[in-house]
Length: 310
Image (cartoon, rainbow, N blue to C red; front, top):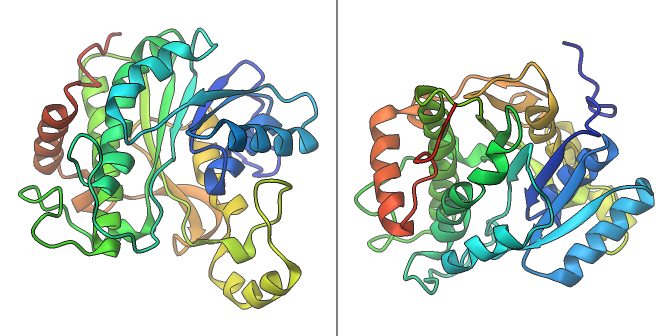
């Protein structure tokens, strides 16, 4: 079907959760879903940042319906209460976007003793998918859209050292945590299909999305003119975070999207309008995904596919 990134499919009947919807690409996913008419739930640790994001969205969409889910993906023990406290009776879409960004953090552990990037980017969303199941099952053909990364093309999972205890490199650990997310998303769709469920699991990635190419939003993103001008040359091959949101929004709203797809930017996977991409074999390897799933169940104590139903 023809798709206009500036006028996506209408979504007044949909309720969508965006984890990390208060900032970065997550904010623009939330903004674009609200512009399409969806009720948007911002998953955010900070209530103040969620309010700022809601207010910025309402500048562009005055009648936008925006809610806040207090959400700390690094704290597995908090996720059940977060889901139970949200003021919706169903979810049509959940966009798994939040995570620790690639900014060279030192290796650290969360309260459960898990490496922080794996814990937040992958394990938190793995467990959240489990707790969201009743809300997702309450909506027909609901979707989980998992945000991957272009960085995963050059990474491989080390299933014997998922926590990167033996060799920690921030960039590699980030890429592997995002690859774990993507592997989980593809495996989730396989398990949902095997169970006869009508829920879908899809993957999206933003390509190369830079702050300097991102339009400003009051209270959410500041982009002074000098920085924008300095970033213009990069716009030949990269894009802003507003455009980086397009693949996830299409995966969330396109009525012709199907489970197991991966959506990314059209031009070399780095910039442009969204299209379906062919995942690389290491992203969809069934044996690796099964082992990762079992390890994730052991680390989180929950199984997102256990209650899959038709």
